[in-house]
Length: 450
Ligand code: SF4
Image 1 (cartoon, rainbow, N blue to C red):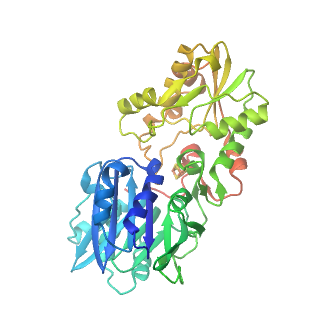
Image 2: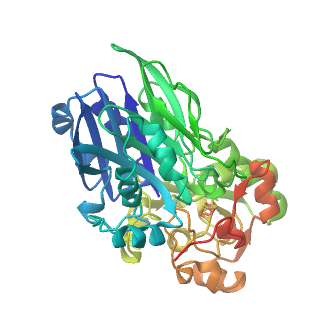
Image 3: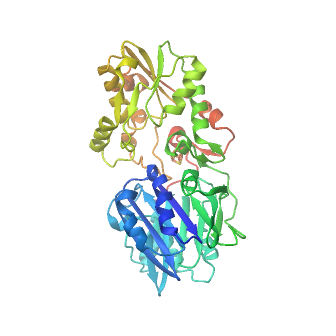
């Protein structure tokens, strides 16, 4: 999973990109980077590490330019090395291009094999580089039209920000898997236009949210606004990632036309209706379980207590690269509040259960703090299938619910009971149709080409 950002027509483009990427840090903590355009030339700064580590103010100060694209990365293809940090940049036949990508291309492997045969050596292990190579084969003055020609052959989940030093375009795949929003803010140059994976990045920059980039839309950002867009055809049924709403996005973002916090609250209410339990208090696993726990408490009538607190610098354990680091991360980030849980029967609410690392450690901490009973309630169905579209759950063996039944999971976690939200309940809470639920249902909207 990754986050992307773009801005045009602002004299402090690099600094604002740094601010926007910091607001998207939860989407990827392995690497960060940006490419700044100045007088038609691109300068790139990208490295393994957090946004604060890679994009230091003194470095940003040196990156002069009025437009920029940026990226935070959690690898779903390629590896953690600096060469795979984005934006990727190429300079073929004297023409520079920089690209930032969120998602995963399902036909990257066959495309890459074909490009390899055509003598296009790859510099990284990422699927994103395929698009750079294809763009180099489609020269022309209009970057959006070039990208439209290339994306006609590309399958899978993507949002993109691409710059050739003069034009900046953003794009979203025809099924709208990953979120992308447009915003604007006043600038000494007139109006600056921005695009970001989540609305929080626009708010952090003091920008007004204008609208979502539509599925299949390619937008050129410029002083005149967003002008006429290119649209990829054919129009396909929307398949927005429901897991963005369940877990990944920040609760203070608006995503796919709905507020994330309010959606998670509804998931908790639905969960309380489906999975009631006799208990004294509702406790969230913070922060991702907080909204669902509030919803559970509201619907069940039980009091809500913050019986676990999260250390401010804890980071997200789900996107730590190894199991050992994930377990250490949980111990460091969660602290029980003994006076709130001692002798109590708890409903412990989390947004989802992936590997079980956080839940297991949280339950152990709450037991040590004196909790009498712990009933784990999960505001999503059992996650049993890997994601092929940009979330790093590649191995089914890593998914607890794919290996064990509910009773065995409760035993392994140390819980007195476990209960999940049903898939119909999930869909009722997020509303409408057009969702990808493959990691819960095993029904994949698009095959992975090998
Ligand atoms: S499989 Fe799950 S995580 Fe992946 S895109 Fe679909 S809903 Fe999202």
